[in-house]
Length: 122
Image (cartoon, rainbow, N blue to C red):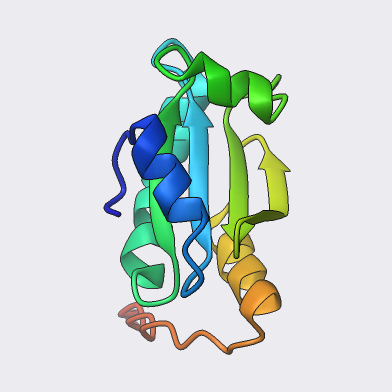
C-alpha cells in the first residue's frame, strides 16, 4: 500500500496483514494542520518504507471509518499492527515519533539514513 488515499477495501486488507505495522493518517482537505502534517508524513514514509505501510483516509470520503474509530480531531494517526490499533496520535507528529512507535511496536531497531553534516565556515 502506497502513501495515498485508500478505499475501504484497501484499508481492511492493509490493517489485517501480519507483516508490518500500518500507519494511517485521518485528514481533511479543509484542515490547515493536515496540510502542514503532510510534509512530516512524507519524510516518515520515505524513511520507514521498509518497516511500515502507510495509508491516508480522507474523512469526508470514508465517514464510516471516522465513526468506527471515533475520530474527532484531525489530523489523527492510527498505527495498526496485526489487525489492532497499537498506537494513536492526535495532531501533528514529528517523524521521530513515528519511528519510535514502529520500534516499540515491532521490537526492531530502525536504521535510518545518516544526516549529512552541515558545512560550517570558520
